[in-house]
Amino acid sequence: MQTQWLDSIRWDASGLVPVIAQDRDSKAVLMQAFANREALQLAVQEKRAIYWSRSRQQLWRKGEESGHVQILHDILLDCDGDSLIYVVEQLGGIACHTGRASCYFNRLGPDGQWHAEGTVLKEPAHMYRPAPKD
Amino acid sequence: MQTQWLDSIRWDASGLVPVIAQDRDSKAVLMQAFANREALQLAVQEKRAIYWSRSRQQLWRKGEESGHVQILHDILLDCDGDSLIYVVEQLGGIACHTGRASCYFNRLGPDGQWHAEGTVLKEPAHMYRPAPKD
Image (cartoon, rainbow over all chains, first blue to last red; front, side, top):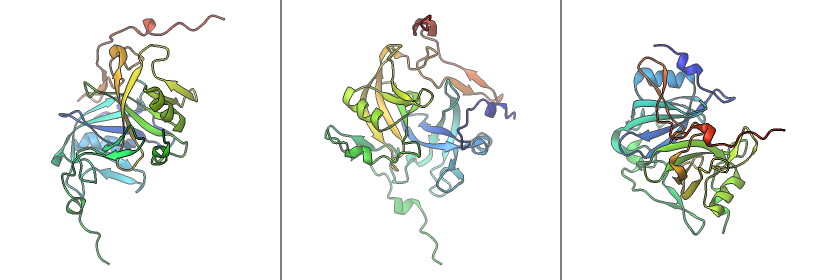
């Protein structure tokens, strides 16, 4: 497959581009992260959402620990080439590490406070293996 | 109104946070831009989507030229506090400066090329005033 399409993307100073994951069926915005060139190329090859983790400074195959893989159906690029959407099928119906369907569960109320909404579908303790004992 | 909610946001090194505009009704992702503290505070006060334009280095009241204002219905914050959604009603049904409903109209095809989709609902020449003659 050609990689010319990667040259159409306006990468930021760190070589990253923001990526929005949107659920193909519910249209919910599930999460937003970043991708570098390699993450995008692998995402297309492996047909799953792959990001670049800025905190861990490594490729992040979404769901590699939790099993909540995002099957990649489409990639959309915006008008000025600096923002992407991964249109995905969210396995397990859970995108967030808190066990919720979407990461955007805090809503600003008229009282000027954030209110956590969204059902916790699975306890995080059941989603991730405990850290190995040394 | 309190401004404590602004302190819950994890601003990047430039004092910005990515903001996704999502259509309240169609759930379409319309665009993605950035906001600083002032843009967010004013967005809440004025009940419309306000961003920080990185290219122009100034506040950007969406629709101030085109009339395609985004009425702000909700603000959602993600689990780790570094990404926002403006849930909006898009006046005129056009978010993109190309005259399309959404800015994400380029789809990556199986041929490895971007394909522009989405109907141009209004010609850009009719959306913006010509630059003033000097």
